[in-house]
Amino acid sequence: MSDARDEGYAAWKRAKIERGLAQCRDRSAMIPADAIMAKFAAGREGRSDGSG
Image: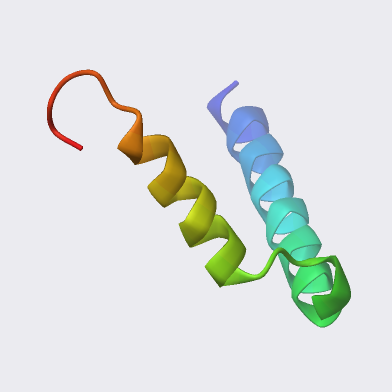
């Protein structure tokens, strides 16, 4: 049974990598890093545990 599971994992991993490569080729679909950092920073400002 382990072999079938390993083959399934290998297929899943390969498909995941191929999807990632396809996303990299289409830069128009990617979110700009500065937009991600701004959203992350805004979320940290509202922390209630005193660490942000």
